[in-house]
Image 1 (tube, rainbow, N blue to C red):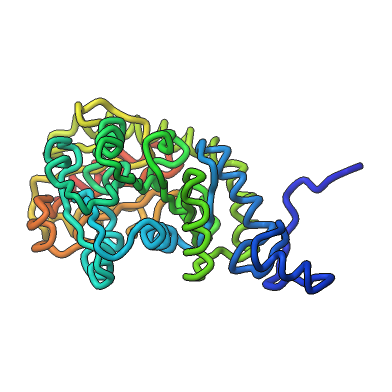
Image 2 (image 1 turned 45 degrees about the horizontal axis):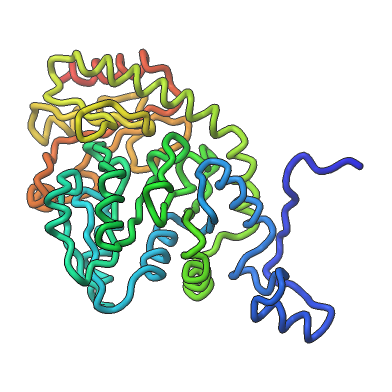
Length: 358
């Protein structure tokens, strides 16, 4: 008997039952029947199985956005009175979540340099429940020492949560984390324009994560889940091209005399790590000249999106104010390039041309 080439789309928000007992069993979780689309649906579960083929977790849970996945995971993990040790350099909206929103629920946070394991250990208190990381850091692209941090977390019986959006599909993170968050809008979505996120984790977090997702309502609808299943059929091939492109571009940029520093995904010892399509540069020029440099680029789109075929340039100043960056010890002149699937030779020529116009 033939079968569909792709998973069928179940475009519905509701499910009907043959009897009261069947409905009651679904409501209380005594059956595997679907109850309401906010709790789960067949297309979503098919996408979750695809995600598990990339990362060896017990479960995957899909959400309507990356921030929905992160915030739901934190609500599932944390309670009033808990303390979180947070990586200093993380995605802006996530930092806002820790600085502005979680404290109002009685959760305290300490931002620290997680690459310094001794400093990290000093930040742990008797109330610490979680260590939160991002892999790699969004602009300097350093990769925290996950194995050492996991050992420290086990020593103090603390959970570890990692945002691996930029590295998903390259490195396996779940052996060193209780929960892994990813943005499905990036590599999985490619150029499809789908917004989404996911958590991957172990058996122990199944009930709290699913309860929090159902209550907070951040689930992905069937159409978007169906498109992502299609897009992820080509993700491995896309990641291979992107990884090759960024390696070639970072090698060329490292030899350019106008660049003060070239940052690429690397461990704390400076060893290059295959982790996404980014390279960041630091220029010895004024902030005004940085603006001119950005405007003179022709192949790179200016924005904060990434993950598809289109090359993108994102200046750090597009995400944060100067005084905020300086308080974090980050140079406001950092500029991040996402290579996409464009020729690295053409991208390098575009950067050199923009530098030559200064």
